[in-house]
Length: 233
Image (cartoon, rainbow, N blue to C red; front, side, top):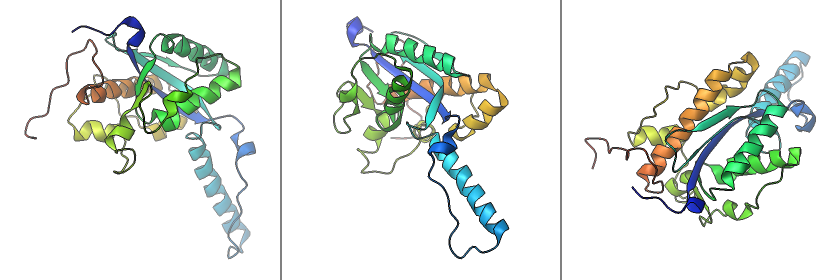
């Protein structure tokens, strides 16, 4: 199959995040409802709510950091994935991403307009990393150099949102990488130092993204076209 010119190749990517260190400083304080009277009940309520808020911080571009970032260009057969155990590694990973992304201005991903791109921008701002102006890619209703598969599959939110894994299962797509990890487990895996599992999950998500993009005919890469599952019309 022929390709676009080298400056028009698409880039699929995915990232994994955890809350920043010291995130409690930026989380709104929690108070128990007025009907909580016993000190132990109040303490338990506050504790549980803080755990909940910390977990949600991993999905807030201003309160999270990147622990894995993977990408694959349309002319490549497999993803490139890096992990970031510390800020120095995250800085280097972001610089490597922007160097690649500048040569592949057409982006493809899942929920990238509401999450991945804002995270990339905020973390780059934190490190003072220069990068191309990509604000046009955040337009929800026009592709403008970025195709968000989640928005397309949900008709820009008209239909319910589902996860990347859901759509791949529903369409009978499989990934080349065995992966039993979920995004909700990334924080625990970071705490345990299980970086190989984190890298594997990010790799699998990039492969899922590419497979889904192929099925949706917005990816024309070097891998074989994704087969249609039998038994469905």
